[in-house]
Image 1 (cartoon, rainbow, N blue to C red):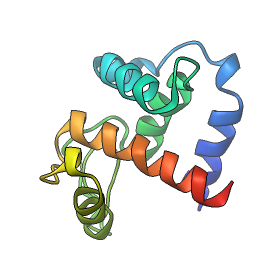
Image 2 (tube, rainbow, N blue to C red; image 1 turned 90 degrees about the vertical axis):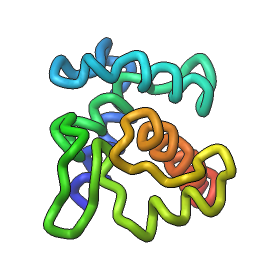
Image 3 (tube, helix red, strand yellow; image 1 turned 60 degrees about the vertical axis):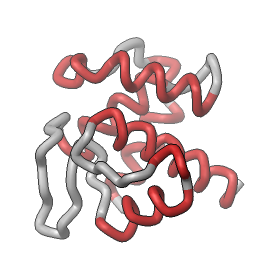
Image 4 (cartoon, helix red, strand yellow; image 1 turned 135 degrees about the vertical axis):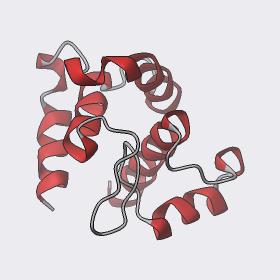
Length: 116
């Protein structure tokens, strides 16, 4: 819940943040490409980059005690559902930065539509 609150604050304040966090710069192109293809040209790229920092400190091989894995810290039920629900996300590859960033953006978009 704390991570969600931090992410929402970052999302709201993304206009004030100009860059993906320094530690996450290696993923800047992936974050930008996925964000713009999912959310359009005004995508909150900096906030989405910051979310990687909050979730995993931009460590792609991280596994939490709750068995969440990768940059985006997907739990098995979530990454399996994303692969099941979206053909372009098959097979599930939660440790692959490109896959997890695309899946994360799709999940945020899905939740935004659901709770809008």
